Amino acid sequence: MPSERTRLSVNGRDHELELDTRVSLLDCLREHLRLTGTKKSCNQGACGACTVLLGGERVNSCLVLAVQCAGSEVTTIEGMSSHQVGKAVQEAFVAHDALQCGYCTPGQICSAVGMLAEVEAGVPSALGEAPAALTEAQIRERMAGNLCRCGAYNGIVAALREVVR
Ligand code: FES
Ligand code: FES
Image (cartoon, rainbow, N blue to C red; front, top):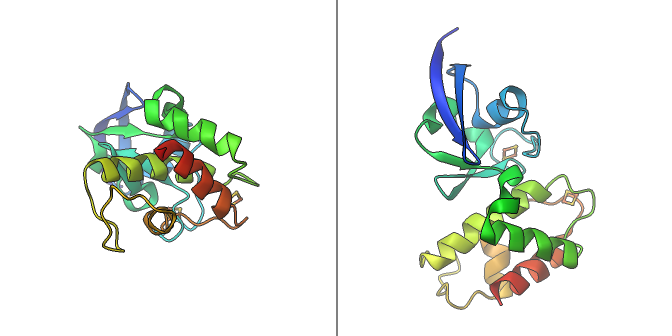
């Protein structure tokens, strides 16, 4: 099996790992670093449960090879309590009951933090609306990559509207 010595920075901590080059970032986080807050569901980029931040941008960690992440900071749900926006999003999720089983929640929160950074950077939504007007429709569109089998969408939108305010 091809393997590679890889240095990963996750939530501000450096890790030196010998990794099979085929290991996804998701499996690396969960099985090599024991950071099990990041969830595996579809394992093929369809649900968003595995969303983390890579260099500040949201990615589906099941679609990224861990060895590709050397040199970039990875932020997972475990790092959100010391992330200013992440902490605010977490508190808003609690205040608005934005979850039921909670399985999708780590991905929803990481995705929301990435989404808010995109808005800050002026990235337009697929609706073609200016990011300054972060409407409910825009929040739903921008978060469309994160599915919730429990249907907690109304609470998620309410939480994110509060963070934006
Ligand atoms: S587990 Fe990665 S997108 Fe579903
Ligand atoms: S809270 Fe259960 S899948 Fe979203």
